[in-house]
Image (cartoon, rainbow, N blue to C red; front, top):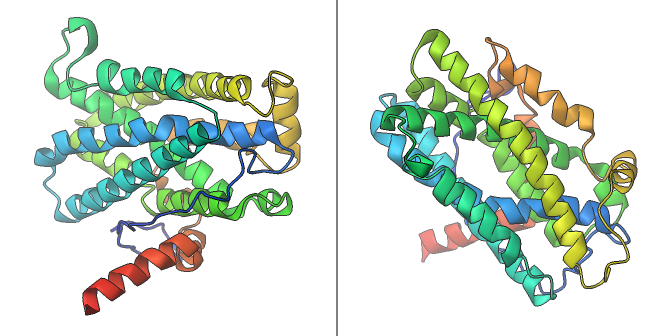
Amino acid sequence: MTGAPGDEGPHAITPRRVSFDWADTPLHWIPDEPTATHVINVLHLLLPAGERWFVKVFKEALPLVRDHQLLADVKGFMGQEATHSVQHSHVLDHLAAQRLDTADFTRYVDFLFEKLLGEEPPLGIPVPAAEWLRFRLSVIAAIEQFTAVLGDWVLAAEGLDLADADEVMLDLLRWHGAEEVEHRAVAFDMYQHCGGEGAARYARRIAGMAVTAPTLLYLWGWGAAYLMRRDPRLAGRLRYSLTEHNRAVRKGLLPTWRELGAAVPRYLRRSYHPSREGSLRRAVEYLAQSPAARSALGAVARAATA
């Protein structure tokens, strides 16, 4: 049960078995904004494999958890992340149906998570199993720092509403973003619980972020460039550029570089805890009105009374 200090109390983490109908979602789901569309679409490239990997690593670490509340939070986190992975993979199917094939990119993402960050260290590197697990937990905690920031951003991104973004895609992003805020502290708490003691644990936390931040930046730029290059509607007429990216930022269609960059020094403070990231109240309010989340809740209620 997680929650921020002050007016946002403890909150149970529960998976929501949502589904989305992509039949009417256009390829450029932010009208006339292919750069913003595809920068956000990179999420769909990274998350199916990435969130499956989160679940696999946490399953490895579950026997180390001695705190009953943390164990409950971790199981809720795993359920949510598994659902995220499935729903974003459906978006890849939708892109493929619109002649934007992502397989040439996602095979590299699969290699990253399944081989380079798999159960055994790559290339036979002699790292003890316990240390390798701690390192991967530190990477997950660092990634979750960014997903919490992005989740809080998309919940408040009025620019996407003003741009008439596709309602189904916006619901996917905001449902996912709300759950990222909802479980924002779980991966960090899991790392703190399993990551050793004292200065060594803090050093591993720094190492996790030192690997994660530049890797995510590289993958995001590469992914956006890939999608725009393969976009059949653009047909090579427009490529990814920082000029167009920054124009989208100014219109409120993408988070600012400052918002993203400031997440790193916050995370590196010794006293840091992610319960201070974002607004749990805003996340819970969105989950109460999300069409997909409401439909999932209704399905559960119907099943319970059947």
